[in-house]
Length: 318
Length: 293
Image (cartoon, chains in turn purple, blue):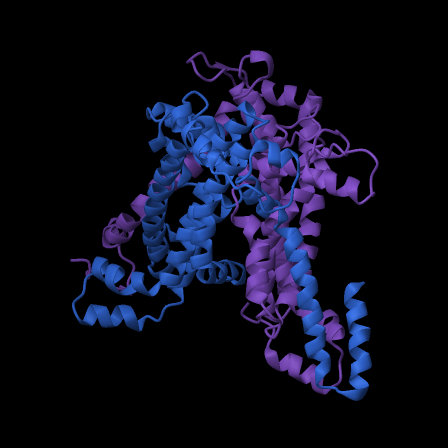
């Protein structure tokens, strides 16, 4: 019944072409329903909501134009959260990429004993749900009998228990460290994939020429996998901007908003207002749209950067 | 620093026995790596260990092996903290969303990757454009949409909305994979008089097994991990919490009960860790493929 589709050389009419591809469109339906409802619709609805003064659960929406945006620009908490999101990303992405690259280079050696086991162990935090990591790490880092503080005290490295999550100056860095620990496994796998594109003959040739192991890594392998670094950085950066579960489950943005990143700010304004204040979905949507646009601009810039860098090299099918 | 040390230790050997050098160095690297890995997974090991101790024993910070192992924590978590119920909620959300996502993305990826039709480029453009939209941007409309559909406080709502999570990446994975398949397969099927749907189902789908496994594992991880959406949907209806939200709420209510919290956490991670151990080869290959593509 479906074999009516054939590549017709002459240009048929629009209706005819649509009808001819009817089975293709049918196949798109389930996917497009999900895509439309949960990805496309929210994208545009957010922009509409951001123009409303709206507490959400009732129907009294009032159109306020760009008032939410105007207020947003004046809100110190918004800018702090906005900045924190980017600080968090800019600090975790390079750390995550560096640590995982070291692991990947070591584990890429096929002769290394138990490298599959090591890879699995390093990957374990990745498959552990964030909420669980939040709980375990809260206990581990607790200033009251937490194992980390006990260990540091016993080793004589510190005199007083450190409140890793309760100190406003420390909390964001603690969270960044935990975040890197959780996600290094994924980045490592990306690097391993990149390393596998380096042909084995290269290593052989280098060995014959008497080049040392670390020299091969630095001068031959690393330059070869640089194109991948951009893609990996992009994927890692997107991940770091979605840090909500970790922060919500560990500090809820506290203490004193010191770890409140963008999504925590949105969640707080839309669903979990302080002291029972009225939820402000319109206002929170405006924050979301502003943030989303900022990320999109960055994404597009990065895509252009990748295109530019790739175009300078010979296309090697990677 | 440590690596340099091993390096120079190795060079001493070179003079006498060149063959031993790399092997000795690899041994040292292995030992170092083993030490790093022990520290790396220490929090998780500690968690499992604590789940078998009484709260008194945990606070007394004895060694990792419990002196008197107890399972009270598990009973308490399962019964009092409702972890049992949350477990099945999560299972429902995960299995449902995995089924929907796998079927929908395979079909969509197939036509996008292999067929030519009007609007194909447009759909591709939309997909790529929305690939990096953060969840904070979409959560409010998604919740409103579920409320409008009458699913604002139901597990079905969580399950349906969870399908949107990594949807775009999965479609692109399928499309990329299908587009690389040889045309002869379809032509042969056509010659034999096999229709479009059956070609897809009996020929193309079985061949895309690596991607199917990747999508199943990634979506399972996503659904099992997802936090923001179930948190919002279950705010007013604690009975339908998922494990992530349930354990989080448990922490809020009983922060001193470390034994119960670690037991609940262990129950939560065991299924995903087991799944990962069985499917890790496919999973890691699939992830790697995502970067190469």
